Length: 125
View 1 (tube, helix red, strand yellow):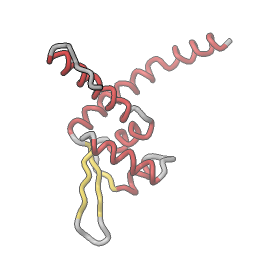
View 2 (view 1 turned 180 degrees about the vertical axis):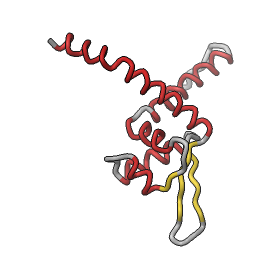
View 3 (view 1 turned 30 degrees about the vertical axis):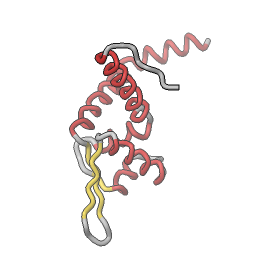
């Protein structure tokens, strides 16, 4: 059975946008994606360099997260036709914009860390 959407076209567009936003947020709001974005910063890195910068990440997790970030247009992958192959990763303009947002979240965390720790301590007692 097919369900018909009875709202306006504008409502349907908003619902699609909200759904896409939730999907993208779900993709990028994991510790590895955030660390990869931060590691790339303002520079281009090769896979091994990126793995070294993202301490504790496995080869598989780095590959999966880079593919997801590339799929979402946040990371650009460049393959050079040399032997052995050279592959580099860099943030796209939207990736750089997301990095600014992540930096803001980190700043917020540092600013309110004492408050959060005190609240947790008080709550747990």
